[in-house]
Length: 155
Image (cartoon, rainbow, N blue to C red; front, side):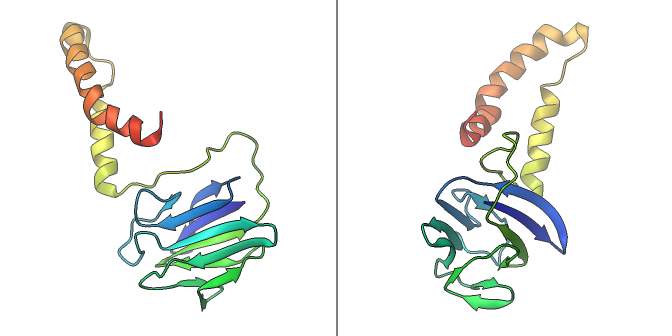
């Protein structure tokens, strides 16, 4: 299945899944994480069954919508717009997976993205005069923040 995440009518991410169940919510434990206060921790789940794809709202606070209609359990068809909080996901049962897409994508907050960029900048090639000193310090830091990030991403 393929899902295109939109915010303010702009495509922001594309997800391709081959698994039977895909969870959507604010918690990082979900397959698709939407970091927005209007989204519940585990907001909804898409299940791939013998009878088709179904979206099930997981008793979310603000509800799940298909084509602007609030639902609890609904069979999905290609082109359906799933609204979760202020975000939309466009559903397509067929993916165009070329093997180049990852199984899932992690969304991060702007603050975390800034922190990640700062940490990655520290690992850039240092000038020759400080190479040995900086490399040793960077190696220690990689076991901390970057090590945890790699662990979370399964790298």
